[in-house]
Image (tube, rainbow, N blue to C red):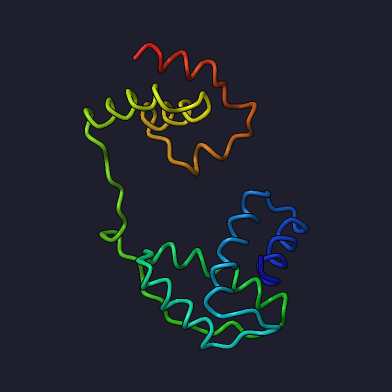
Length: 157
């Protein structure tokens, strides 16, 4: 892990952010370090090169907007000026919210019952039954998710 990624991780934990958030931001910082290298301070071209790399990887604009947040924090911590960049506005038509057909959901559940552990099966049940997304399922603390009840509901289907 690079110095920047570790610095971002520790800073977020020190600010009281959740460990999962710190890990996610650390991952994005590691990607940046892979592209731009490890430096005490970065310049505009480093950020531009990273944005170009993100686009070549096929990341959507919303993802790119999220992935540059650690860089802004890095600029704050290291004392360098984050460049002003006019980013493409995300249009509502660009946001993809694909829906599965009912037969696809049934197939996922059948395969899930054979291959997934109890926790993974519970996540599948919540997402297919209630349409919950990953972020929504991650919000409650673990005791708020009653796996037994979800598994019971899933076993009835």
